[in-house]
Length: 510
Image (tube, rainbow, N blue to C red; front, side, top):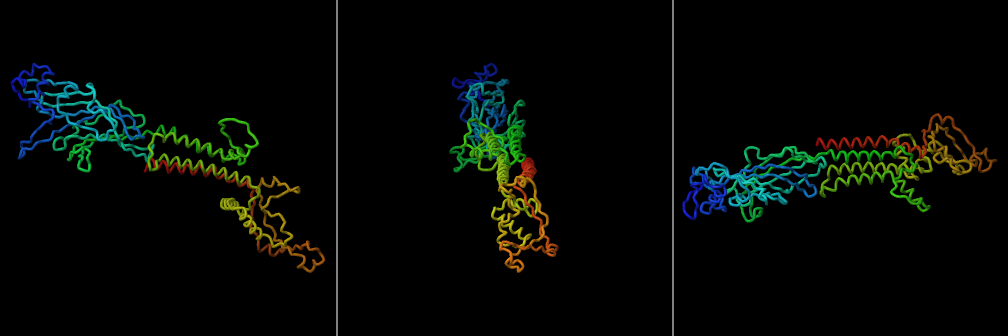
């Protein structure tokens, strides 16, 4: 309560109703009545002994706009109006028959005691303003002081990018008392709408789902010197906004193009294995004889490398603004999955092309996936051993003079020694053959008159009926290559659909 002292050193407030606002403020804050270094003091006279009460500072924040989060620097920018209100009975002038409020700017607040409030998670801020137009001071006849400050603050916000770009961030704004602990000053939110936002505020990359406020205590001790050398409990206020990232940009610019790139890598399954794949020419130059082998090798890997490089460029463009974190993000899982499918199509193309260029046919026990893959992956010496074991079951032992006979696993040649091209273009199935037994002439008496190169062939019909040899098949390398391509046309899309089902279930359900 202001005290009216009538002397030359302490001007009177008796004529307060006729004074100008500047004159009234000057007399209310005169050193004989007011000390701006001392906080307002109130007592609880009902307690025994009389207890000194802390001053209660009510707080309200009106947010003009939030700038999009800076994911790389882990911060966001906010423009807001911070309003602090408290009662200082030393400035009350109602008893002097003055009932209007006193309004002013920074020059009035400089004559008053103000609570020292700061942002504990600030990078930089202009709290309480640096210009007169940013500070509005209101003084009521009851001594209620309201300080409204327009401010701009850059605040720290810890972000979790494990589900990027389907993530949601929780960014808080924390205010704390700097000088006075809870025994002298207590911060409280206003009872009605302590946090409010401009209805025209919009965010481009995020959508504000909800927000809430909280009141806490901060302990400052010798180990935690967040308030300098002062030890005690300090009042703290905070409000948190829940920002959910808008995924429309990432769906159109990252996920859909990456799906299309993966699908493009499957085009090689419909191309003939020995056909030169389409080439993307960055420049033209004359092709020389020395370039033939190099260009052949380049063409061999071109379908997968072009799509692989396109996808790597696409994925790197969306991760430039993110910090380098140690955990795996959901976007990286998608990147690794798509890279696996693109790389798989490249390996399949190289594998099929290698099989297509083989010269010898492949002998199979049955035409199914198990035997085709096993025979294809088996090294050449092992295949010959397998083929030899199968032929021994269907043929009797022969003399050394029959060792030069061409087996069924070798290519059929013409009389001039060239490969019969027609043999490699169809599936050859051998029917059940009769068992042929050959004996050397030197072991049979009736052949004594013949030369050593003559043989006697005896067909055992009874044994043919009892022991029917298994049917075996020979497939040309071209037939196996086309068989693998046909299976890949179905296998790769099905696996990619399964990957998508697991991925999107994890993103939206888990």
